Each structure stands twice: as structure tokens, then as C-alpha cells.
Picture 1 (cartoon, rainbow, N blue to C red):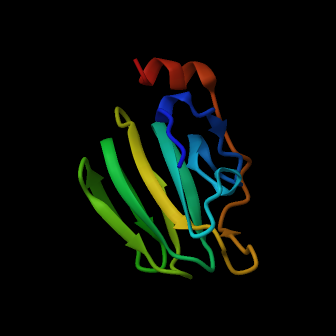
Picture 2: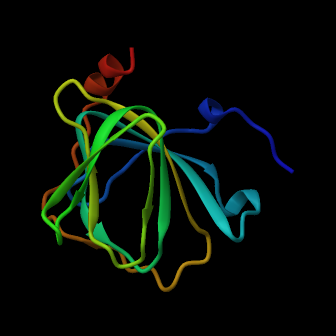
Length: 140
């Protein structure tokens, strides 16, 4: 068994194509001995985004604080989410997450540890963006 506080876990910048102002803390990961499920804490600053993408595995999201919306490009929908909302994203479904002006969010994401051959398809050709000063200001 392993215990630790979430904010003792190092923060990494999400560097996927098109990501904007997103960090991840890998709370429970394979180096911890997880062989079925992984848990990550994502934070999106104001005007942050994970770009639309899809992959061969499902995952679940729970909104801890703040607000955001899930983009579903195949359906042309933007679904608003707030504290306490949960989302199940089936394998292969196009999705992205975004915050708008004045919005920040913290969310837990659970995904399988053993994934099919890794194939995340990002529907963006933009480079990732991350401004540490902007993130520090929004977390105050």
C-alpha cells in the first residue's frame, strides 16, 4: 500500500499537440505498482485546453473544482461541467477539454494501466502552450 498527499506528487506540463495551460500529477501510476488503473490530477488554467483527440481506451473524469466544458467534435457539442460532475468517455470517442475566460479546473482522470498499443490521435497540429506565470496567477 502506498500513501501520499496529491500535492506532494510532482507536476508535469502536458505537452501533447495543441495542449494549452494544462498540467498533470500522476497520482497513481505503474511505477507505484498499479497494473489495472491509473489516476491523474489534471489542472487547466484560464483558457486552457486538451485538444480534441481520441484513443483506444476509455477513461473517467470527476470534476474536483472549477468549471470547464467537454468538446465532442464528432457531435458538434460543447458540454459544460462543474464541481461534482462525472464523465465516462468510451474508447474511440473524439473529445477535448477546455476552460474559458475566468475559468480554471482541477479534475481527476482514471484510465486503464494496460492499454491497447498506445494510439492517441490528436486532431490538432498546434504546438502545446504553457505560461507558468499565468498558471501561478490563476491558482492563487
